[in-house]
Length: 294
Image 1 (tube, rainbow, N blue to C red):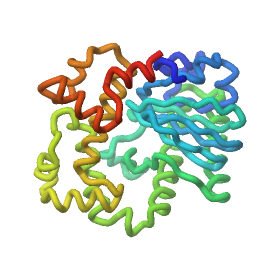
Image 2: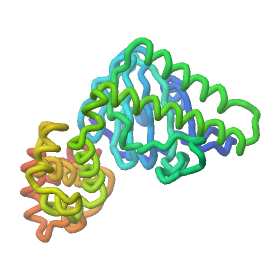
Image 3: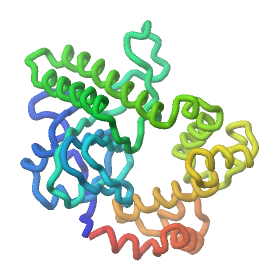
Image 4: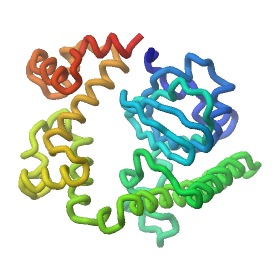
């Protein structure tokens, strides 16, 4: 049974005694330094986390959905997501924790000394080939070794920043290759990516496809075609799923009354929110909260 969420800062996000902006460690090390209850808990993340499974297999929970992670697979967790490591014990892997502000902004123009990377280019879940697995493993192991060096924190953070940018750029390239470069760069995929960014920013206030289409300068039909091509779901379904996800996170991660959650997500009446939520999840908001929050 899922436990109630806890701030992941309790799992020692920063190395003890070091002022570093990224942390790299093995999951087996985390298992040794926290309780079994903490491992099974649901966590609400405020930073990015890479979980790179190097051996065994595990089913983890991401935003209340199971994700099967075999060896040589990578899971990317983003701020705001809810996650549980799952109950499987026969696996290990790397964890890389960092905050977006550690990376250069997309407007960075310092003579290309650092790669410009939109974090939305990263995969959610990706299985790697043997060669790519070896390259990613080597890059993460090097970062861990460097993080333990006796260099001044300022120099060490600069080094880790370069290494993290290189790692993330490699993962973005692998994701593009997995999709097919032509598909990844197609106008429809690019339009869908812009749509998803707008949904992330505005789902609480914009419930209609027309609002997003107007912001993107396209028709409702063209936006729906882009969404169907990338996800197999209509633009309307993508919006509804994101609103429902926001509701799930609030129901489990907060004690906020349901009527306030409804109001914060743009519903004029709590009854309308309850009908919407039940249609999307097959559960009432109260039943969902009781199921996951113990």
